[in-house]
Image (cartoon, rainbow, N blue to C red; front, side, top):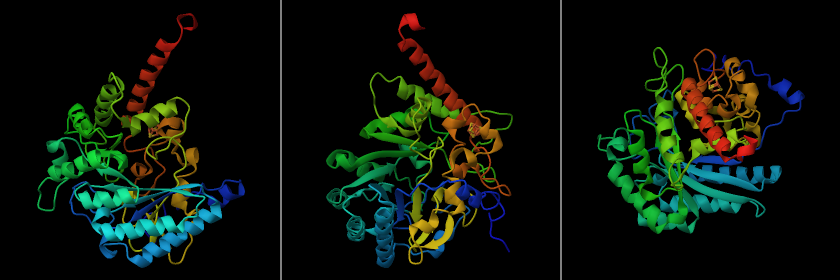
Length: 406
Ligand code: SF4
């Protein structure tokens, strides 16, 4: 019996030999996501790792064993040398990566730094729920120069609506303790906050609560979902763009602030694209995504947000023990996220904001039976948000022009 997804785009319909014959070549991976620990000390109800269609975490080791760390570090060094890369990013991820413990994390980071040739700069960072940011953990992360991003959904009420312990208790107080340590004593490591949008949370109150520790950047994430398993209140009967309205309220508050309070990745990416730049995030734009994930068992995977599509969606069938990273570069799912315009649905290709939106996050395009060749499940929201930001910029550019050239 064919596996789920095998009869759908890109596994069916993406002509990779034609791409190759036409001279297209993949962009080398520059971002390695390491699932150093596959379990979590929280039980957030929207988590795509534990609460989605894909439940493969159950069969994998909780922590990444030393032999997987060693094999992955070797593969990374091998890959950097063969592609002569001058810069890579290694992201310690989970589950909750800090559950691996200080000693195992320190050994992992050292092994990765040692595997990389001196000609290549390695940036190491971690994405954590913040609960385990103790003084000892932060001292270790500081010693190893690891950037830290923390998930925080706003004020206590907003955050504790979803980010809870298994017993239902909210995690906001614990997260803030760790976050305050990071933002004060180890501020140089502080990379920013990740906030998942919840329409039941007030956008301005959420944004202002996030500003409390003066984060260098905030990343607003749309809740993961697909056309088959839609996110909350999307699509809306008879139209409606509730996510655009929520984000526009934050954009206006952020953009019109008398001084720059923080960076907001989604808005900055859209502004950058509107002004003719390239996107550096996979949420918008058409730039190739050059990320590879290694799970705790050593399997090589595509981006793990695909877990919301169907069981096994991120798998490549490759492992660090038997394959080089090069073997993943021509995987249809990897290629699909690198070919820009050619990966867009017909409706997106003729869309007025096509080059800015880029069809939205790849994971949000999935529809059972069709695969990923669809507009984003957030299409109307993306169109409205981008149009609003575009009009705001146009207005300001017009005001900035000398009177005679208007
Ligand atoms: S706004 Fe909709 S149609 Fe336009 S590119 Fe984005 S997802 Fe596609």
